Length: 486
Ligand code: AMP
Ligand code: ZN
Image (cartoon, rainbow, N blue to C red; front, side, top):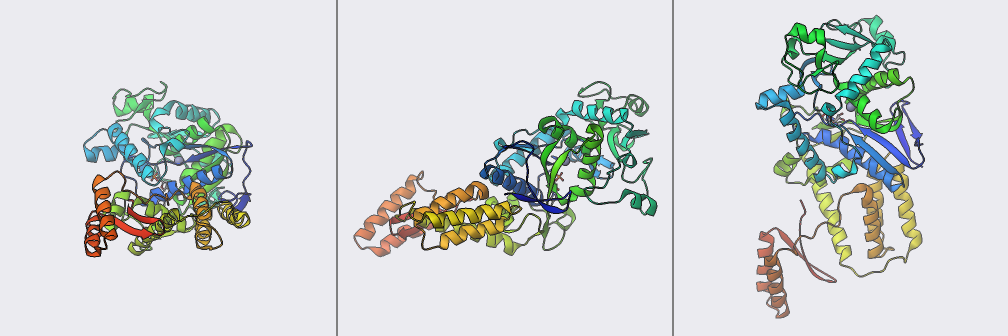
C-alpha cells in the first residue's frame, strides 16, 4: 500500500487513485529563461521516482509537465519584468528563441538523469495555451472573483474562503495584522495577477495577446492607454498551471508536485483559481520536494554556487547519474546539502555499485534457487518505496541483497535489474569497449603475453588501456575491460 505525505493534510496518507489503475500527475515544469540548476533537477528526479514507483506498483501513469515560457515575473509578487523577456533582452534574442533553446537543454538535462521526455504524457507550453488561460480568467470574472487595476486583472483572495489551506496561512490574520501591505492597487497582499496589461514596465512586453481575441500571437503594438483599454497583455504565471493541468488531467486529478517554494504562493494560487472556477476540490495529493542547499546555505547566483549538470562534470568530474544517486540517498522531504565531498562520494558510490554488478555478471550462477530470500528482498524494497518514496532505505535493500551470500550471482543481478526500474541508475552500464577495435587488439596482445608468461609486456598493454581510460580486470570468468560510464 503506497503512502505519501500530502502537504494539504500535513500527514501521511494511503494513496487512493481516482480511477482504478491510471494515475494523473502534474509537475510544475521549468521557466525556460536560463539553464536549469541541480536544485530544479532534484524536483524532477523526485517526480520521476514517484512516476516509476507508481508504474512498479502496476499503475499506468499519465504525467504532465509544463514549460513556463511566459508570465513568470522576476518577483513572485506580480512585479518586475517577465523572466523570459528579461532573459531574452540580456541575450539579445527573442523570448521565443530563448524559450526553445532552454527547453531543449532542459530535456537534454533530464535525459542525462535517466528521465526521458517520452515518459511524460503531455508537455504543454504556456504560450500555446493562452486560450485556456483566458477561458478560466473570464469564468472567474463572471463568478465575481476578479477586479481590474491599471496594470492588470487580479484574483481577489478574500473572496475564496479556503485561501491559505495548503500553506496553512491564515488570510485574516495576515490582513488584520497588516504586517504585509498590499502593494500597488491590490486590495489584499495575497491577491495575484491573472492577466497583466502591456503597460508601465511591461509596456514593451514582446509576447502579448489580445484579451478578447482568443489565442492570437503578436497582438498589435499600441500605446499604453490603448493596451489598457483593449486589455492587451499576457497571463500571470499561476493561471497557466491551473489551465494546463485541468485541460489534460480533468477538473480533479490525483497528484500535483513541485518544490517547497511553490507551497505558499504558486500552489496556493493554483488551488484558489481552479477551485473558484470548478466549485470543488482540484487536486487530491500535493507533494513537495525540499531544496538543494550548497554548503548548508542557499544556492544563488550572487554567491556563485549555482551548479548545472555540466558543472558537475567539469568541476567535480562526476556524471549526472551520480547526482541522481545523491538525490536517492536523501529522502525527497529532507534538504539535500550539496558539497564537494557529498557529490564525489556519490560518484564513487555509483561506481562501486556498478563494479559489484559487473563482477556478478561475470560469475556463473543459476536463478530461482532461493525464492524465499528473493521474495523477502522484493517485499522489503516495495515496503520502502511505498513508504513515501523512501529511496535511501530502498537502496539499503539493494545493498543488503548484493551482500547476501545465500543468493546466487544471477539472483542478485535480477533483483538489481528489477529495482532499477524505480532507481534507474543503470548499474549494469559499466562496460564500454566492444566498439573500439584498438581495445580489442590490445586485449588480444595482453592475452598472448599472459599465455607466454611475459607479464611485463602484458602489464604494458594494461597501462596502455588505462591511458585510454579503460580498466582491466581479471575475473573468474576471464578478463574484462571496461570504462567508467559518464
Ligand atoms: P522554476 O524553473 O524556478 O519554476 O523551478 C522549477 C522547479 O525547481 C520548481 O518545482 C521549484 O520548486 C524547484 N526548485 C527551485 N529551486 C530549487 C532548489 N534549490 N532545490 C530544489 N528544488 C528547487
Ligand atoms: Zn506550476
